[in-house]
Image 1 (cartoon, rainbow, N blue to C red):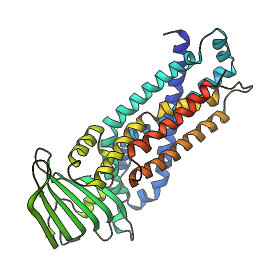
Image 2 (image 1 turned 180 degrees about the horizontal axis):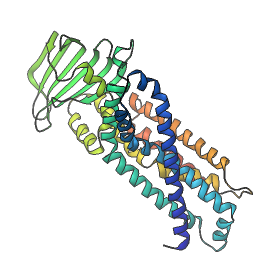
Image 3 (image 1 turned 120 degrees about the horizontal axis):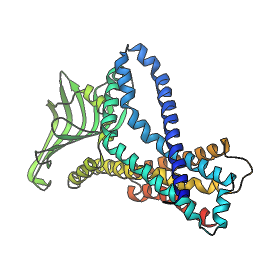
Image 4 (image 1 turned 90 degrees about the vertical axis):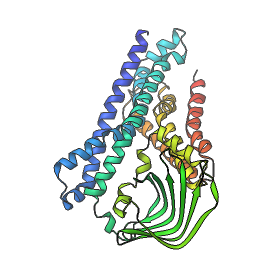
Length: 365
């Protein structure tokens, strides 16, 4: 590696780490003030608060890597441009790719670290923080009126996959219920579909329940369809468990998502399958967002400036980040609605920003 490459890589990684630490600190401080009233109201022990925010660190790191990447890239290239270092390199006959390649490689390293943290630590972190939040910090959620949780999906302790269109914690009421029971080989052997279910005296009472018994290929067996206008059953999940598992799908890593999708392909549960597909694709695309945002922001730092990069560079980086976030949110909404295939609409977001970046870079003389 040449001296210039080491110089650029070191400065980029140094500023990425600095920005990650700064934004993580601000994020946690903001979250503390946002939940301060609930913490005092519910008398949450200090050890629980400390444990909650320590477990939140992987989530915060993953969320701050993309913004840190684009700001670091703008600052490094902007400083080099202000010091006429970019002109010196170009005048020696070296292409623009020679300057950008060390940052691209470093950004790919950042993406790899982000992917590792997202797969290894974020799932358990999301599950733990959600459990603490519901049990200690937001313990009064179940008593709030007119609270509705949409598209609640999670794995139950009875080796079953639950998909609930709407859940009302204050009424302990589920609507649009699909439950897939699996055997020890993780094959779906029974499928329940109910209009609604409500909690009564320690049991769930389902209305208009249809039970399908499936064969080894997850196909409905002939004559194994049963309809119950009303049926009382005892499941392992209580209304309190439903709240704890509100964000359960976030606790699945890519391997678990792939296994779930494979099992759901033959279950005729299109809505559940779509939810897992969207989560899988979005997880993968999010992992490359630091590299995409870096390349999207570089063209803004290449024009020659008379002043060193400062708040203007940070402002441009934040604008690009917010624009990416808005486009990604719209694409995610379209993917979840099923209007557009998730692979197409979610994959188009990074491609759109990369096309903008490469077009601007190649136009630089």
